[in-house]
Image 1 (cartoon, rainbow, N blue to C red):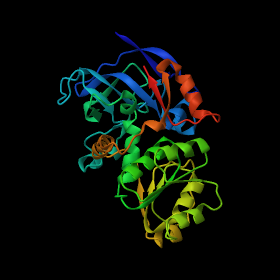
Image 2: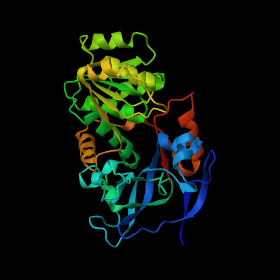
Image 3: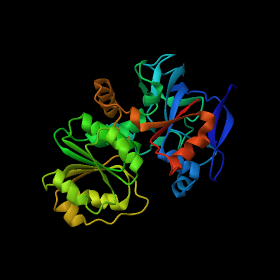
Length: 347
Protein backbone atom coordinates (compact mmCIF):
# COMPACT_ATOMS: atom_id res chain seq x y z
CA UNK A 1 0.00 0.00 0.00
CA UNK A 2 1.25 3.56 -0.74
CA UNK A 3 2.43 5.51 2.31
CA UNK A 4 2.08 9.13 3.40
CA UNK A 5 3.20 11.48 6.16
CA UNK A 6 0.58 12.30 8.77
CA UNK A 7 0.28 13.94 12.20
CA UNK A 8 -1.23 11.38 14.52
CA UNK A 9 -2.56 11.45 18.05
CA UNK A 10 -1.01 8.10 18.99
CA UNK A 11 -2.59 7.59 22.38
CA UNK A 12 -4.37 9.17 25.36
CA UNK A 13 -1.68 11.68 26.30
CA UNK A 14 -0.41 15.16 25.46
CA UNK A 15 1.35 15.73 22.15
CA UNK A 16 1.34 14.20 18.68
CA UNK A 17 3.80 12.62 16.27
CA UNK A 18 4.63 12.37 12.58
CA UNK A 19 3.94 8.88 11.34
CA UNK A 20 4.09 6.98 8.07
CA UNK A 21 0.51 5.92 7.41
CA UNK A 22 -1.26 4.17 4.58
CA UNK A 23 -2.84 6.43 1.98
CA UNK A 24 -6.60 6.03 2.59
CA UNK A 25 -8.79 4.29 0.03
CA UNK A 26 -11.93 6.23 -0.91
CA UNK A 27 -15.29 4.51 -0.78
CA UNK A 28 -17.80 4.69 -3.64
CA UNK A 29 -19.19 8.04 -2.44
CA UNK A 30 -15.82 9.58 -1.46
CA UNK A 31 -13.01 11.65 -2.90
CA UNK A 32 -9.31 11.11 -2.24
CA UNK A 33 -7.64 14.50 -1.91
CA UNK A 34 -3.96 15.35 -2.06
CA UNK A 35 -3.72 18.00 0.63
CA UNK A 36 -2.15 21.24 -0.55
CA UNK A 37 -2.71 23.27 2.64
CA UNK A 38 -4.30 22.63 6.02
CA UNK A 39 -4.94 25.11 8.82
CA UNK A 40 -4.88 24.58 12.57
CA UNK A 41 -7.98 25.13 14.69
CA UNK A 42 -8.40 25.65 18.41
CA UNK A 43 -10.01 22.20 18.43
CA UNK A 44 -6.71 20.76 17.21
CA UNK A 45 -4.94 22.46 20.12
CA UNK A 46 -7.40 20.82 22.53
CA UNK A 47 -6.57 17.47 20.94
CA UNK A 48 -2.83 18.15 21.07
CA UNK A 49 -2.97 19.14 24.74
CA UNK A 50 -5.32 16.24 25.55
CA UNK A 51 -7.66 18.29 27.71
CA UNK A 52 -10.91 17.19 29.31
CA UNK A 53 -12.92 17.66 26.11
CA UNK A 54 -10.44 15.63 24.04
CA UNK A 55 -10.43 12.84 26.63
CA UNK A 56 -14.21 12.65 26.50
CA UNK A 57 -14.48 12.68 22.68
CA UNK A 58 -11.49 11.15 20.91
CA UNK A 59 -10.52 7.54 20.46
CA UNK A 60 -6.84 7.51 19.47
CA UNK A 61 -4.87 6.57 17.48
CA UNK A 62 -6.24 9.19 15.11
CA UNK A 63 -4.94 11.48 12.36
CA UNK A 64 -6.43 14.84 13.31
CA UNK A 65 -7.00 18.15 11.49
CA UNK A 66 -10.22 19.20 9.76
CA UNK A 67 -9.51 22.40 7.78
CA UNK A 68 -7.95 21.82 4.37
CA UNK A 69 -7.92 22.19 0.62
CA UNK A 70 -6.35 20.11 -2.08
CA UNK A 71 -6.53 18.31 -5.39
CA UNK A 72 -8.88 15.42 -6.18
CA UNK A 73 -6.70 12.44 -7.16
CA UNK A 74 -9.30 9.65 -6.98
CA UNK A 75 -13.08 9.71 -7.42
CA UNK A 76 -15.41 7.11 -5.90
CA UNK A 77 -17.42 5.01 -8.36
CA UNK A 78 -20.77 6.55 -7.34
CA UNK A 79 -19.61 10.19 -7.20
CA UNK A 80 -21.04 12.71 -9.64
CA UNK A 81 -19.99 16.30 -10.20
CA UNK A 82 -16.28 15.96 -9.38
CA UNK A 83 -13.32 14.99 -11.55
CA UNK A 84 -9.62 14.29 -11.21
CA UNK A 85 -7.70 17.52 -10.72
CA UNK A 86 -10.54 19.49 -9.15
CA UNK A 87 -9.38 21.93 -6.47
CA UNK A 88 -11.62 21.52 -3.42
CA UNK A 89 -11.98 22.56 0.22
CA UNK A 90 -13.47 20.32 2.88
CA UNK A 91 -16.65 20.87 4.86
CA UNK A 92 -15.72 19.16 8.14
CA UNK A 93 -19.28 18.31 9.25
CA UNK A 94 -20.17 14.91 7.83
CA UNK A 95 -23.96 14.42 7.91
CA UNK A 96 -25.76 11.08 7.85
CA UNK A 97 -28.28 12.20 5.23
CA UNK A 98 -31.34 10.49 6.72
CA UNK A 99 -32.12 12.01 10.16
CA UNK A 100 -34.79 14.68 10.72
CA UNK A 101 -32.23 17.52 10.59
CA UNK A 102 -30.67 16.28 7.36
CA UNK A 103 -34.06 15.85 5.70
CA UNK A 104 -35.15 19.39 6.65
CA UNK A 105 -32.10 21.36 5.47
CA UNK A 106 -30.13 21.29 8.72
CA UNK A 107 -27.33 18.92 7.73
CA UNK A 108 -24.79 21.01 9.64
CA UNK A 109 -26.42 19.95 12.93
CA UNK A 110 -27.16 16.36 11.89
CA UNK A 111 -28.25 14.13 14.78
CA UNK A 112 -25.61 11.57 13.79
CA UNK A 113 -22.91 14.06 12.86
CA UNK A 114 -19.30 12.96 12.40
CA UNK A 115 -16.49 15.48 12.25
CA UNK A 116 -13.40 15.15 10.12
CA UNK A 117 -10.28 14.78 12.25
CA UNK A 118 -12.33 14.16 15.40
CA UNK A 119 -14.51 11.13 14.69
CA UNK A 120 -12.70 9.95 11.55
CA UNK A 121 -9.13 10.38 10.31
CA UNK A 122 -8.46 13.96 9.28
CA UNK A 123 -6.34 16.13 7.02
CA UNK A 124 -3.04 16.70 8.84
CA UNK A 125 -1.57 14.43 6.20
CA UNK A 126 -0.47 14.22 2.58
CA UNK A 127 -3.85 12.72 1.65
CA UNK A 128 -7.37 12.61 3.10
CA UNK A 129 -10.67 11.05 2.07
CA UNK A 130 -13.93 12.97 2.45
CA UNK A 131 -17.48 12.26 1.26
CA UNK A 132 -18.16 14.04 -2.01
CA UNK A 133 -21.14 15.67 -0.27
CA UNK A 134 -18.61 17.51 1.95
CA UNK A 135 -16.44 18.86 -0.88
CA UNK A 136 -16.60 22.45 -2.12
CA UNK A 137 -15.14 23.09 -5.58
CA UNK A 138 -12.85 26.15 -5.67
CA UNK A 139 -11.84 28.47 -8.46
CA UNK A 140 -8.24 27.53 -9.45
CA UNK A 141 -7.14 31.12 -8.79
CA UNK A 142 -7.92 30.92 -5.06
CA UNK A 143 -4.64 30.78 -3.07
CA UNK A 144 -4.28 27.51 -1.19
CA UNK A 145 -3.76 29.36 2.09
CA UNK A 146 -7.23 30.87 1.67
CA UNK A 147 -8.66 27.57 0.46
CA UNK A 148 -7.49 25.94 3.68
CA UNK A 149 -9.34 28.44 5.91
CA UNK A 150 -12.74 28.45 4.20
CA UNK A 151 -14.17 26.07 6.80
CA UNK A 152 -13.45 28.31 9.84
CA UNK A 153 -14.20 31.43 7.80
CA UNK A 154 -17.60 29.89 7.14
CA UNK A 155 -18.27 29.86 10.89
CA UNK A 156 -17.80 33.62 10.87
CA UNK A 157 -19.96 34.14 7.78
CA UNK A 158 -22.79 32.10 9.32
CA UNK A 159 -22.46 33.81 12.72
CA UNK A 160 -22.30 37.33 11.28
CA UNK A 161 -24.85 37.08 8.48
CA UNK A 162 -27.52 34.86 10.03
CA UNK A 163 -29.39 38.17 9.92
CA UNK A 164 -28.60 41.30 7.90
CA UNK A 165 -26.03 43.64 9.48
CA UNK A 166 -26.11 46.49 6.95
CA UNK A 167 -26.52 49.83 8.67
CA UNK A 168 -26.30 48.20 12.10
CA UNK A 169 -23.80 48.49 14.94
CA UNK A 170 -21.88 45.29 15.65
CA UNK A 171 -19.75 44.32 18.66
CA UNK A 172 -17.40 41.35 18.33
CA UNK A 173 -16.26 39.77 21.59
CA UNK A 174 -13.09 37.74 21.11
CA UNK A 175 -10.50 38.46 18.41
CA UNK A 176 -9.33 34.95 17.72
CA UNK A 177 -9.36 34.00 14.02
CA UNK A 178 -13.15 33.54 13.82
CA UNK A 179 -13.79 36.83 15.60
CA UNK A 180 -11.33 38.59 13.30
CA UNK A 181 -13.06 37.15 10.25
CA UNK A 182 -16.39 38.28 11.70
CA UNK A 183 -15.18 41.86 12.13
CA UNK A 184 -14.10 41.98 8.49
CA UNK A 185 -17.31 40.34 7.26
CA UNK A 186 -19.49 42.76 9.24
CA UNK A 187 -17.61 45.75 7.84
CA UNK A 188 -17.71 44.39 4.28
CA UNK A 189 -21.46 43.78 4.66
CA UNK A 190 -22.25 47.38 5.51
CA UNK A 191 -22.26 47.52 9.31
CA UNK A 192 -22.41 51.14 10.46
CA UNK A 193 -19.81 50.61 13.19
CA UNK A 194 -17.79 47.53 14.15
CA UNK A 195 -16.47 47.36 17.71
CA UNK A 196 -13.87 44.69 18.49
CA UNK A 197 -13.32 43.64 22.09
CA UNK A 198 -10.41 41.52 23.35
CA UNK A 199 -7.66 41.40 25.97
CA UNK A 200 -4.69 40.72 23.67
CA UNK A 201 -3.11 43.90 22.22
CA UNK A 202 -1.73 42.07 19.20
CA UNK A 203 -5.10 40.62 18.27
CA UNK A 204 -6.74 43.98 18.88
CA UNK A 205 -4.36 45.42 16.29
CA UNK A 206 -5.29 42.62 13.87
CA UNK A 207 -8.93 43.58 14.40
CA UNK A 208 -8.12 47.10 13.19
CA UNK A 209 -6.48 45.62 10.08
CA UNK A 210 -9.66 43.61 9.47
CA UNK A 211 -11.76 46.76 9.51
CA UNK A 212 -12.89 47.29 13.11
CA UNK A 213 -13.79 50.95 13.66
CA UNK A 214 -13.22 50.85 17.41
CA UNK A 215 -11.18 48.47 19.57
CA UNK A 216 -11.79 48.21 23.31
CA UNK A 217 -10.02 46.12 25.93
CA UNK A 218 -12.34 43.51 27.41
CA UNK A 219 -11.28 44.45 30.95
CA UNK A 220 -11.82 48.17 30.43
CA UNK A 221 -14.10 49.33 33.28
CA UNK A 222 -15.59 51.88 30.89
CA UNK A 223 -16.48 49.30 28.22
CA UNK A 224 -20.25 49.77 28.57
CA UNK A 225 -19.95 53.57 28.67
CA UNK A 226 -17.76 53.63 25.54
CA UNK A 227 -20.21 51.43 23.66
CA UNK A 228 -23.07 53.66 24.79
CA UNK A 229 -21.30 56.74 23.42
CA UNK A 230 -20.74 54.97 20.08
CA UNK A 231 -24.39 53.94 19.80
CA UNK A 232 -26.25 57.02 21.00
CA UNK A 233 -26.90 55.38 24.39
CA UNK A 234 -28.99 52.67 22.72
CA UNK A 235 -26.55 49.76 22.83
CA UNK A 236 -25.37 47.68 19.88
CA UNK A 237 -27.75 46.12 17.38
CA UNK A 238 -25.71 42.93 17.12
CA UNK A 239 -23.36 41.12 19.50
CA UNK A 240 -21.13 38.39 18.05
CA UNK A 241 -19.81 36.43 21.03
CA UNK A 242 -16.82 34.49 19.72
CA UNK A 243 -14.79 33.92 22.91
CA UNK A 244 -16.89 31.66 25.12
CA UNK A 245 -15.62 33.56 28.18
CA UNK A 246 -18.32 34.01 30.81
CA UNK A 247 -17.47 37.69 31.53
CA UNK A 248 -17.63 38.46 27.80
CA UNK A 249 -21.00 36.71 27.44
CA UNK A 250 -22.46 38.70 30.33
CA UNK A 251 -20.96 41.96 29.05
CA UNK A 252 -22.34 41.25 25.59
CA UNK A 253 -25.89 40.96 26.88
CA UNK A 254 -25.45 44.14 28.96
CA UNK A 255 -24.43 46.26 25.96
CA UNK A 256 -27.05 44.76 23.62
CA UNK A 257 -29.79 47.13 22.48
CA UNK A 258 -33.39 46.27 23.34
CA UNK A 259 -34.65 44.08 20.52
CA UNK A 260 -31.06 43.34 19.49
CA UNK A 261 -29.47 40.13 18.23
CA UNK A 262 -26.98 38.05 20.22
CA UNK A 263 -25.06 35.41 18.27
CA UNK A 264 -23.32 32.78 20.40
CA UNK A 265 -20.38 30.94 18.84
CA UNK A 266 -17.66 30.76 21.52
CA UNK A 267 -17.81 27.65 23.70
CA UNK A 268 -17.77 28.19 27.49
CA UNK A 269 -15.86 25.61 29.49
CA UNK A 270 -18.39 25.79 32.34
CA UNK A 271 -22.10 26.69 32.70
CA UNK A 272 -22.64 30.47 32.51
CA UNK A 273 -24.88 32.41 34.88
CA UNK A 274 -26.95 35.18 33.27
CA UNK A 275 -29.47 37.77 34.39
CA UNK A 276 -31.91 36.03 32.07
CA UNK A 277 -34.95 38.12 32.93
CA UNK A 278 -33.38 41.54 32.41
CA UNK A 279 -30.80 40.76 29.72
CA UNK A 280 -32.79 38.39 27.53
CA UNK A 281 -36.53 38.38 28.23
CA UNK A 282 -37.17 42.04 29.02
CA UNK A 283 -34.74 43.13 26.31
CA UNK A 284 -36.58 41.05 23.72
CA UNK A 285 -33.21 39.71 22.64
CA UNK A 286 -32.94 37.28 19.74
CA UNK A 287 -30.31 34.64 20.52
CA UNK A 288 -28.79 32.43 17.84
CA UNK A 289 -26.50 29.48 18.52
CA UNK A 290 -23.97 28.80 15.76
CA UNK A 291 -22.62 25.32 15.07
CA UNK A 292 -20.69 24.87 11.84
CA UNK A 293 -21.89 26.33 8.56
CA UNK A 294 -25.14 25.97 6.64
CA UNK A 295 -24.48 23.41 3.91
CA UNK A 296 -23.96 25.04 1.52
CA UNK A 297 -25.76 28.37 1.77
CA UNK A 298 -22.95 29.75 3.92
CA UNK A 299 -20.31 28.69 1.39
CA UNK A 300 -22.03 30.54 -1.45
CA UNK A 301 -22.21 33.71 0.68
CA UNK A 302 -18.55 33.34 1.63
CA UNK A 303 -17.32 32.98 -1.94
CA UNK A 304 -19.46 35.97 -2.92
CA UNK A 305 -17.79 38.07 -0.23
CA UNK A 306 -14.31 37.00 -1.36
CA UNK A 307 -15.11 37.73 -5.01
CA UNK A 308 -16.45 41.18 -4.10
CA UNK A 309 -13.01 42.25 -2.97
CA UNK A 310 -14.51 44.01 0.05
CA UNK A 311 -13.53 41.21 2.43
CA UNK A 312 -9.86 40.26 2.58
CA UNK A 313 -8.98 37.57 5.17
CA UNK A 314 -5.23 37.59 4.54
CA UNK A 315 -4.19 39.55 7.69
CA UNK A 316 -5.61 36.78 9.89
CA UNK A 317 -3.01 34.29 8.57
CA UNK A 318 0.04 35.08 10.70
CA UNK A 319 2.07 31.85 10.51
CA UNK A 320 2.93 29.17 7.94
CA UNK A 321 4.89 25.99 8.61
CA UNK A 322 5.72 22.75 6.89
CA UNK A 323 3.54 19.85 8.00
CA UNK A 324 6.47 18.17 9.75
CA UNK A 325 7.07 21.36 11.79
CA UNK A 326 3.68 21.05 13.51
CA UNK A 327 5.31 21.39 16.95
CA UNK A 328 6.29 24.95 16.00
CA UNK A 329 2.70 25.61 14.95
CA UNK A 330 1.25 24.53 18.30
CA UNK A 331 3.97 26.48 20.12
CA UNK A 332 3.05 29.63 18.17
CA UNK A 333 -0.61 29.19 19.09
CA UNK A 334 0.29 29.04 22.77
CA UNK A 335 2.95 31.77 22.76
CA UNK A 336 2.47 34.86 24.91
CA UNK A 337 5.33 36.66 23.15
CA UNK A 338 3.98 36.80 19.60
CA UNK A 339 0.55 37.47 18.12
CA UNK A 340 -0.91 34.37 16.54
CA UNK A 341 -3.90 34.46 14.23
CA UNK A 342 -4.46 31.57 11.84
CA UNK A 343 -1.70 28.98 11.35
CA UNK A 344 -1.40 27.17 8.01
CA UNK A 345 0.52 23.91 7.50
CA UNK A 346 1.87 23.03 4.06
CA UNK A 347 2.48 19.32 3.31
